[in-house]
Length: 417
Image: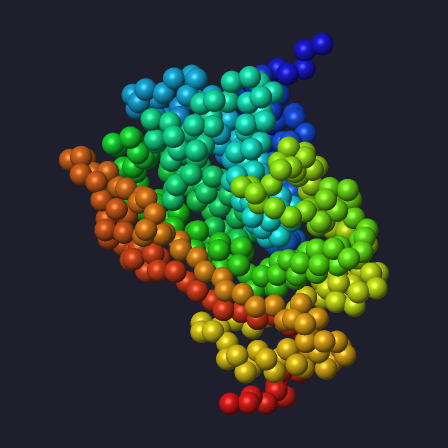
């Protein structure tokens, strides 16, 4: 009985969207891809925005739709893009996030150490190329940026690609942060191909400006919201502590998570890549949260405390500063944590989280977003913009932060200056 026929799905962002052919359908139906249904797109952001429960699966289908829409529009302008190239670009973007692990960016390098999600996505694409012999050769070239039509790779990954357009629209919709919404149709309709790269028609410049502003707003209001940072760094410390404990005694966890807690090695230095990929393909948010719930009762005080607090949303207080924190201030907090709980300074270090968050809405050292004028001249958006100082958005915003238990009364800390 034939099941891999063309199907449609109802997307809350774009309406009815079609799965174009049997190859796309077979890949979407495969367990490697279905796993993305169980990975939240924006990690623990739902602890601040309760409706932000959408998945990498929905995002990947959305990017596939936008890719195909972009190519149809470029074809309408006379650019030569074959059916084979369209299929390949569509598959490349469909699988661009297939290498994300549980809780997406939060646990990158925490579970699968030394391997990026892009590396894992490429490994999964190569597996699909074995399952469908040679059918993804061109998709892999587009994904890796080695295909001669470079503008197809730019649609997959650049400072204005269909990935960013979809996640801004989708994340804005599900968080309710209206300022993050972007005009996808306008951005795609304004795209041109110049010197084998993408450019935006000059009359679309304000849509690009809105896109960059939306990106800046979403980063600081959603992705790097202070409460989200606290929760995500607590989860990282939980995995760090669990990995340490698991070297000495078994911890209750699913087989796949147990494998990664004990595993060492990087992409370049390992002899178990096939097994690693098989275990990774079974790993999702549920593995991690099941373990976190189990570890709430672990005899290790630090692990159980962190897990209980995360499960019950008793998150750490977070302090944010434009400048690095005074080392004496940080050291005093560490000693107070150790005293308050009667634990060693080393154990207390798992309950004093430090980090730096930074973001470029527009990165001046990466390939530019180019604006195309009627006379054929090209300008970087940072030079072309007349209503918005893009150079300001090009500067990185850097914030230093520390997190610690709210029960700690930092007002009574005496600095040893």
